[in-house]
Length: 229
Image (cartoon, rainbow, N blue to C red; front, side):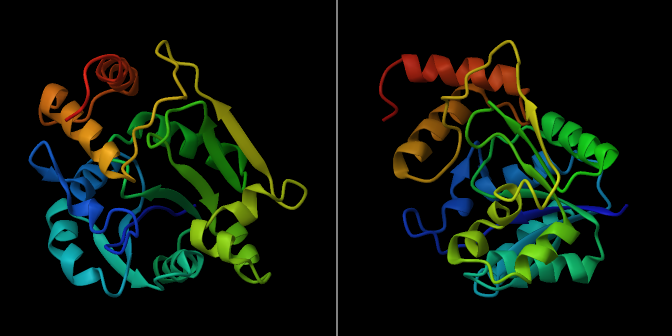
């Protein structure tokens, strides 16, 4: 089975344009994501963007040792399917570039379990928003793509798979770390998110990714403290 990490990114976020190029701890958010996911044992690591964003991302992808693939802006599902064809992969680790605190250890474990169980979709439940990934089979995405998916399914890639348990084989893994706190928000979608993440990286980042339990502990301390700005 050939595997790939597909990290989706674009400049055109409506709420926070170009957010993936915002700096945290001296690095763009996009680079934090690629470096965290570089720890995964996959055959390909590819940054999936739209054509308009590609020029701004090429040097960062090259610096991280990643390949880059450009596809549809709005139909992200087709971007994934086209890339899966281009790189001839069987299983995809789907991640998004607005999550600079991605946990590579649980991502690798989810991939291994998905491959072993030969499921169509696998993910962890109970992890903070922005710390996890999805594992999906190329075959499942191709079937959804061929079945006239709606706009939500084409934008978010995997709902057509995990909303069809009778059609596809699904697996949910329960996160139960000592710092379990699924209510935490670790993603970057708004300026308030950026203020929190900026405070987090200024306070705790020392050049390398932190284990998820430590991230949760530190994030909880910031949330319990003063305002971010």
